[in-house]
Every structure is written in C-alpha cells, then in structure tokens.
Length: 611
Image (cartoon, rainbow, N blue to C red):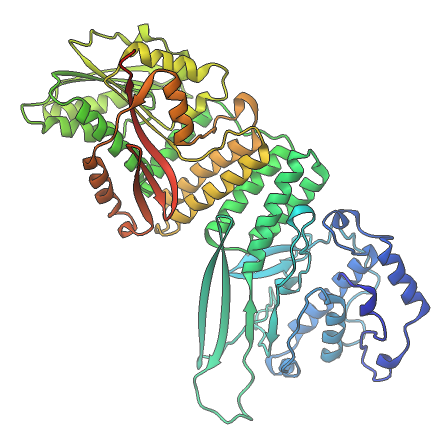
C-alpha cells in the first residue's frame, strides 16, 4: 500500500495479457506517483502514523480484497491448485500488486463485484481479530464474512522515537482447501487426516514484555507418488516483530501524552489495540490494560474512586491471594517478624493498617497458640475503608477470627475502625495501654504508598506510629518506583514491572481466581497511568526510598531473621514448584521476585534509641 517511485518504473501490474507488462509508464501514472511523493490527497489519520496512503487507493484495495474473498469462497479445493507454486511473497506492503496477481491467477468472472462502491478510507480500516491463534483482518462494519489474512496488513511504521527498521517477512507456499461452510471461509493449512502439524515457539523479552515467534509447518506422513501428492502449505507467522512494534507503539503513545500531543496519542492508542490482539499470553494482556489506561488519560475518563470501587478491589485482592504467592509471602514474612518480636510477651496488640478480609491473622493466631508456655492474650485492631452498603464488614471479619480464637484456645480481643484514609487516624482512637502491660506491633501491607498523593499524609501516619511506640513496624510494599515526576519515566517503569507480574501468572492454570487476579492488577495499571493528583493512589516506591522516609522519621531497620528467609523459600515451593520465583535478602529485608526482577519487599522497623 505504501509505494515509492522506483517501484513503478518500468512496471505495471499484470492484468492477464502478456503485452501489458511491457507498456511504458503513462504520464497520468507518473503524475499520481509525484502527487503521492508530495503527500497530496493522503489520508490524514494514516499520515499521522507515517503512512502514505491515498484515499482513492484505499477504496480500490478494499474492493479487490472483497473480490478475492468472494472468488476463493466459490472455488473448490482442487480449484486452487494453480496457487501451489514455489513463490514466496515478501514485503506485504506490495498489497496492491499482489492482489492484481492473485485476481489474474484466479481468472475472475466479469462482474465479480460491484465497481461503483465508494468506501471511506478511515471507516474501512481493517480490524485484526484472533481466532484459534490465527490472526485475520476483518473489514469495517463488523462483516465477519470478509476476512483478510493478517499477513497482508502493512500499517507497521511507528513515528518518533519508536521508529525502527522493518524486518517482518511472511512466507506463503500455499495450496489450500476451502470449507464446505460458505460463512467465514479461511485458508486452511491442511485438512487431510494423514498429515501432521508441528509447532514451535521461542520467547524474546522486549523491555519486560514477552514476544512469541510461532512457526507452524504442515507435512504429510503417508507415502505417495510425487505426482499424486498435493502441495501442503507452509505458513510462517512472525509475531515477534509485532511484539517489538507493540512496545514501540506503547512508548511512542506515552511520549505523545507527555508532550500533550493528543492527536498522535489518539492515533497510536488505536494502533496499540490492533497490535495487541495479534499477541498471546502475558504480552497481550499487559498491552490491553495499558492501552485502556492510555485511552482513559487521552479522553479524560478517570476510573472510579468510590466506596464501591474499594469494595471491588478488596474482593479482587482475595482472588489475587489465592492465585499467586505474593500476598502469602507478604503475610508470612510480616507474621514471622511480629512473632519473634512478641517472644515472651503476655499481652500483645497488633494494629493492622490493611485489615481487608483479615487473611493475614489466622496463621499468626495458630502460631501463638502453639507457643511454648502457652499463648498470650491477643488483641487486634483492624482499620479499613467503609463498605458501599454501609454494612459493618470489619465487625464480620472480627467475628470469624473470634470463632477461630475460641477453637484454638487463644484469648482474643478485637476492634474495627472505619477510615477513608490512614491519614485520618489519631493515636488517641486506638486505646493504647502502657508498654509495660501490652506490646504493640503495627502492620501495613500495600497501604503506605496510597498516602504519597495526599500532602503531608505519610508524615502524619508515621507520626502516629511514633506515638504508638511499637516494638516492631512491619511494612510490605511493591518494589518499583512509580512515583516520579515525569510521566514517561513512570510509564516505562510500570510497563516493565507489570509485564513481569503478568508473566509470572502465565504458569497458573486458568481459573476464575487467575482472571480476577489479572483484573486486580489491571485496575492498578489504570490508576497509575490514567490518573493524576490525589486520584492517583498507586504511587509505589523502592526500598531505598522508603528507607530514607523512615530514617528521617526516627525509625531504624529491624533485620528479618534467617528463619524467615528459609520458611519463605519453602512457601514458594508450592507455587509452580518454586520455578521462577526468587527470594533474596537485602539489608535485612526480604524481596520476592520473578527470575531476576524483585517485585515486593517486606521490611521491619523500630524506633531509634533517640526516640
């Protein structure tokens, strides 16, 4: 579709006569090429993406594709034998000439399609669809009977800093059979029961996103004379280049958003959607969520931030807890630090900044019940957001924990606090008792980063913790910097981070928990990319950044023991047989990552001697 001047010189498409190829280039044709070089009559939307596509030519190409589909649907299996040649079609951008050649080979009957159809080049932009891992282009308007092989789609170039050399090649050596069903006819590689299909794939990591190159080869296993054996199709589909293009499109769109060039950003986000559906696995899912977030930012459609949304996030987090080890690791390592800090104490009190469904505390209560010398009196204060239906969910969680405590013979006290933000807390609300009577631990899992968008919020909460004077302060946070001042830097870091997270979920068997876990992460992506100001609560920071904050507030590290490291490593063995997950110690803190990338960090803190 995109042609240069030298492609026309001395050549015209073959229209069925031997003399046509020797005709000189006409003056009108040369003028058309000259206009195309000058950018005349080019489609503006496609021009933004760097394509030189004439509007009139778009309609003609769409018409020829419709003719080809109609003719191939009417030809029986043996009727396509003339296509079984050794020709390899390179450079899909030569779609115009390729269509002419195909139509000539099939010898279309007169009047195969109406010649007076006028299509708008934007409305007829094809949409890529994926069916059984085979990509096709569907004509605009939702007409599923007009299906075009995706290998012929040549809108590939990404402008700006994302430009790179095109290396995609699609090789087709094809003799195909058509289905008896006249609807949704597609080229099939083989229909014989005596054939064998083999498939191999290799993964390449591009900026934290995995691209897959899939090669499918069809061969015959039944011996037959060479003259009687029909040629089998060999289809090479390289999705790795599409993966590279997808990453470049995401980065180019983010850069356009940062520069407030919304026209280019809007065009690119549409291109991202088309490229994403050609991928599989984690790459497709991550790109889809980031494309949605970019679109929300471009069109200023901020995601909801209300009580219903908080309740949904709480439910999704439960699915995330069941699917992968990250929350279990967070709870286990924090509990181990609290258990060691409560050693020998008769009365203990845990203040939980992240109560949610109380999933963390049954394990700690059972460990306290088995403690040598008997369990202490265990008091729990849970803090959480208000419920959308005004129900007392924190009270319901407390009742369940009370039933467990009674069953394992642990004396238990519970109180729940509803707060829209941790910054609304005051130490006087917590009914603190003298440290000689009761030892206090403060626990926060994935909560403190939400305070960074509220001026003075984190400082106030750390001040409240200092007033509580806990024997230990356990903190679990995402190990990534998503709180920088530059949008493009935040976008790049979050793309790497969530690509790794989604990749770690690929080994999990498909289930409702897995789907809901992906939605849980997608909501974080949407908030991180689409929102700004107080609405952007996903402001993750690294361990070193949190260490600086805690140090300036009068806290010092309380190193997690080697026992926590060993137990955490054993915990991971039940997930994917421990393959891929990695625990490492960093300055007395424990990090859980996927392969070489740390994803979450558990740290423990206590007040310095001066405080």
